[in-house]
Length: 459
Image (cartoon, rainbow, N blue to C red; front, side):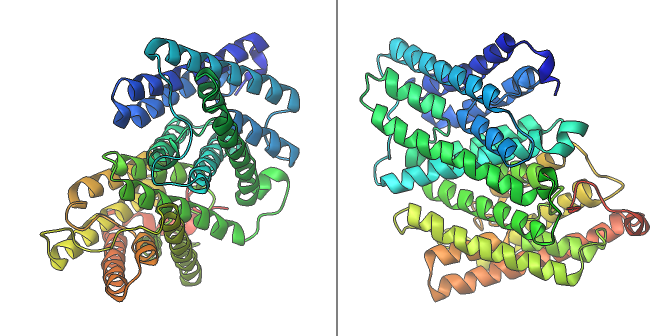
């Protein structure tokens, strides 16, 4: 993005600002009694600064992101060299320290680094590792991928901010959701050393997350590393996206966070933007069914649809086990919420899953109505609509992988039966969406035979 034209001093100043201000906003919210808004504040400030400074420094703003770019470069892909990586990480750490000192001096207090009550060090370190990896993964796929480094896009900031919101909400109740070694170490050092050891432990797992993100980036975009594309690339993409989505659902809902719905929506939006051009970013058997029924993606044949659905369900089950383990074996059931019938829940799941699938088809698959920049936002907003409207009725799973994943975490024959019922109605919603698109986008049928959509499933 023209970084070579920026003097080193300008790049370093941009990185300092991009670390200092987002995490200062966390300190202000958390220590001023508005902890529930910390995740929103962090995501918003980081998003706007990413757009403001990406052309100056690349907007890393995080040593884990910088290390992921460095590892990607070492693996033969896009990224940054050792000199730039070392300089950026040093500046980021200084910015984190300055932010920590500022918070301590303003509030005579500091944030605690370490597992929250009821969680172990293993739980906390896993959450810091997982969501640091996902943030780095989104950065790599939306800014460093060769397709976007040449063509560019306007959604990278939304994608990065969305995943940071998801990570902060999902990991926050477990580990604090720091997700950035610069801020983690800065808080520990500025807090008179009482949590410095804890900060170094967290930082090590956050950096490992950056390394893991580079490896996953190589797996989903082998062409960027001068390797040949293989059919399993799509399945790896679907597995990563579905696993990440279901884990976020489980952690956010189990925590009872008022920001659970926006966090889940942000997670899905980010993953769609990151992997839409790799596998189609379905992450949902109902969406895969809708794409198959619509006939608008000629590459989505029945055999491939079965493979997609199989890997999505498998990833959902593994994710269910994972978020159950993180929550000390605790989970929640699938089923109608208190005071509502199975019929009401079935109607809610069918309609809002259908809405989600229809919007995917209309904004990301259709040749006529594709939105090249806003398709991920539109898809994410479907989760907000469904979560707000149907959440108190059915729980708003809207995805058979989520329903089966929750069953895997909760267990019980009655839960299995309900999860299968939910899955059936969700698939009905997908079929309904696919059929509806045949009517509303009838002119797409002929065009679909001629070419495939550049944003959905062309890996």
